Amino acid sequence: MTDNDYISKMKKMYKVDPDVVDGMNWFLVLAGAAGTILCVLALSYWLIRFFGFLLSASRGAKSIKDTRFWRNMGVALLIIILIMTGSVFTLLSQFYDYMALWGWGS
Image (cartoon, rainbow, N blue to C red):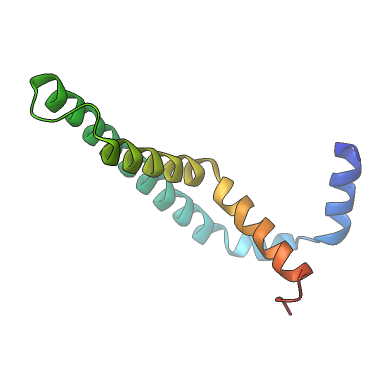
């Protein structure tokens, strides 16, 4: 299946009413701005914690081999990246599609 086939099928399946989208434009702009600010704050907090840990490790206050720290920071970074790129919504959509196939949906 080529990209054009996929796009044409999507256009047939999902008809977007421009009036509804125009009416909700203010909400979408505010939600997008709030999401962007929250993602930037989360990434900033992650970077501060990361460099603070590296500073503490260089001074000898903490061990660089702290596996709990690295695991927590890795999971947190993965979640932040998934949210920032919008991949979390794709994963939720795929999960919903599988649940519908298995009979959990309407």
